[in-house]
Image (cartoon, rainbow, N blue to C red; front, side, top):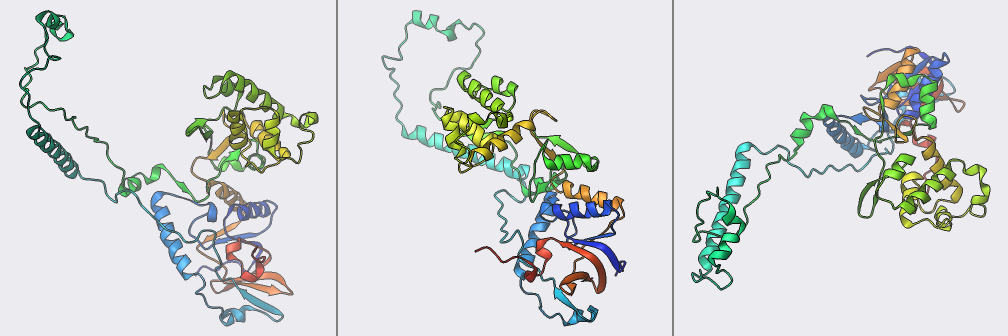
Length: 421
């Protein structure tokens, strides 16, 4: 067992985004920080996994879910760590943010072998030929040509087929001719679980996918703290919305508005005029006077916008629901528009390797300023003195601290606010 120092200014438990920001801030101003996590990965509910690790996480989460509430409430084994006028509170696992996990797969575990694929193709072809023969045997053959099929010699010479001097096609055997369609065989390989596992290094799966406004507070924090250098970012290429039964690209910038074919010329003018107004709506109070506390939808209708334009504004630009009031809708639209053009056509940025990169950036900064990290380690109990936390018990060691910050799933139930009815 690795012994840790007996005192830290701050102990942080859990490596979610809020905990990592606090740990980095404390280390940056010279505090001695210990950062623990019971998992073997960073991020907590912000974690990102390769496909094989994601399957492992599912199985572990199922086991944790089944064992929830089966822990002993006996604090006597750790009571020896408490001094006079101190008491220990057990940190029992409580409700997690992810529960009742069920995995369903709608693809094969293994891909079909070439022999199996060929066998299926041959079986389909044989079945089709058999059906065709059976159909031709049942239908009587009329050897006498109908009047519609009689063609004079002159008419025959004028047909396109007779004009082809190089036609060397063999004569058609009318006895074997059928009207059955030729089967089309799709030779495209089906995806399977093993294909995903083979390509596991080409993609990650986020537990909590996140995108950021390019002029949002988080991006500004990453820039001003110089933490952005610890990760790679890319601009989201397009913003799509579901409208008219399919996905369409949202016209965000002036160039997009005038190049899109999904809105009419009149709608383009409407949309451009409204977006220009949203950028500086505070300076034009007369435009929305009387609608401040009313519904954003009613305000848009007062502007005589078409349903198509209303959909783009509400669901794709402001990204609010129809219960949103006017001021909130205008502020949301303004936030979207202000982020356009900073790093690309879209207002959004994302990390290249998943949302877990964000908390890890702050962990790296904390480690640079001598923060200490220990994964797969948790606090079994919290030591209290006069209702103030003065330390934790972890792996048989008491570690004293001045402040303790922990993610809610680590906290004792009595530390949490009552559940909302």
